[in-house]
Image (cartoon, rainbow over the protein chains, first blue to last red):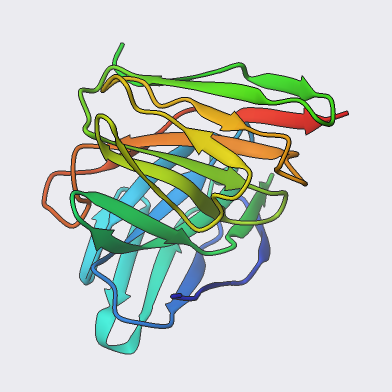
Length: 111
Length: 116
């Protein structure tokens, strides 16, 4: 099956710093999504980004599908950004989508 | 409020027992999913359902069973055949394929299962 690798596995930032998270995938995909899991386990979709660049406030994401990677940028980090960031790729069958997740980047933002 | 409700939040199971995790959604979504998350790991797909009365195995279905008798409900049973069931379980739903514009996936708050 498809492999999804994320780096770095852990990241500690001081509040206000910027960071870049990377997601590499081993095969062509239909789409790619970024999620944030808060410390209580809730997963929230950040971006649906099969290709190109999107921005949402302090977050932006870029996917280069031909080179099989995606980047998530966090600018001016805040303590509320702490948690685990996952990328997931979509292998779609029928009317449902089978997401394959990476192992995540655990981010801790300190004061 | 619209969303996905999982229960119970915390569950303890004795070895050899079956337990059922509940997942209910009021988003009118056709597709529903169960994922398992182990500490420090990503999510792995257990089962998914595209429509009522239909479901398919995911990547780690052994030791689990599901049913989809109603559109809004997709319960997961962790059977005694699952040798290492201690994990965080997440239910999700989507309004169709995620490659289609405007569709997205929503997750419940999860259920922690511990074998004692």
